Image 1 (cartoon, rainbow, N blue to C red):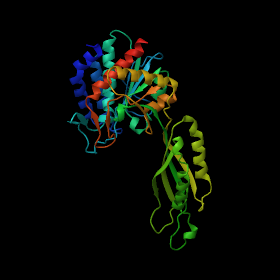
Image 2: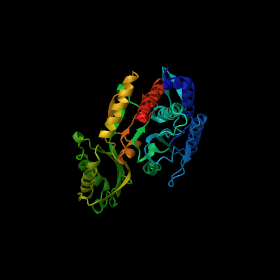
Image 3: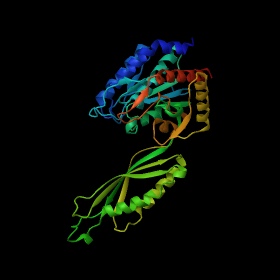
Image 4: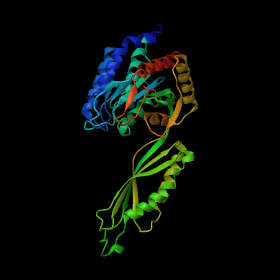
Length: 381
């Protein structure tokens, strides 16, 4: 029997048990206590197999991240995953259940199954190369769901010299696809300042910020360019005080997505032109970029990695296609550093961020096998 498959078979029940355990620990992005517990649990899993995951904190916030082989500075591959979820302790969606060959529960798909795939891939690679320093550097962060604001600097500092970046977000149901491109995203808050006045007595003395917002929204909507992958949505609006007062303020929440780094400057130029040109009521507009991610673009180097990964999948009889998506991940950050990336290397499931979230049980060991064999090829090269 192939040694990688042998180790996976021997560890299969342990793999499932560890997965169940980490899902049952709530690790909502703002639940620091829960994040600490998951980080400690992952450390203990790794330590059973003589692998030390170091708990680290960035200067920005006191939240835990885990790193392996931190001392590596060159000639390494990056493995990235996140153990925070979108499900709060108050959500009522707190425990894992198994039904019809699937695991249901908070973070099963996004992305605690991917964490287990990455961790046990590392464990098995260490067994396959005993006594050898693996050319692998790993980071499990705890803030991807809120923009990786705390771990972004860690990734830039520690992983931007990687020869390849492998991110363990969930694989897709359609053809068990992995992700080879993601759109960049900009989250913007617009504030419009008007002037309050009595709506019945002297409305002409007011400046209606909602009227200005309506004009701005209609103009911004014209910036959508679906053919070139640019979308702009004014998706949240809040303004005014009471019905009988001219609205003195209005806020608009805007989401922008784009596919190529070179599009960014023109998008922001067009956005600012709309925002700052005079409106019919004379309201003033300003904006703040809440957070953003650059696009994860396909490159010749990443195409080469996908070709090898696809070849490996074919060899073990596992379906594997590729897809692009509008959602962001930590692959966007690595790609922006010039690291060729593959994403969606975790187990396969669906309905992330909902109470219907699930992952297909058998894809956990299968994705471990696929990644281990893929890494064997890279290491031997």
